[in-house]
Length: 139
View (cartoon, rainbow, N blue to C red):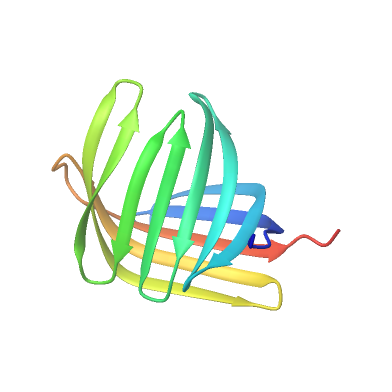
């Protein structure tokens, strides 16, 4: 049995240390599997195309990126988790510590946010807030 994938318009906003903000608008798909929901989208970067999958659940999340940039960022509230970030010039160990995870989906509209501390290879920690708003694209 295949899972229906809904076409969605996705707005991704990343804020670093409440200081720097990056915003991205992409089209992708949304689907539910097990007790989690997933967003899948692709973005073009200088290094090439990057495929992203965001797994969202009530108290945990996972961001997987593949292609020109490879990344695995797991999140669980109040737990330090190890991940990885791989670029053409090397792979780096990352550490995330989620302070808050919010996820909701209703009537074709969804919202996901995670507030987390992030560090790479023991570098100083930055606080990130990732907010993703998405809505079903009607044919």
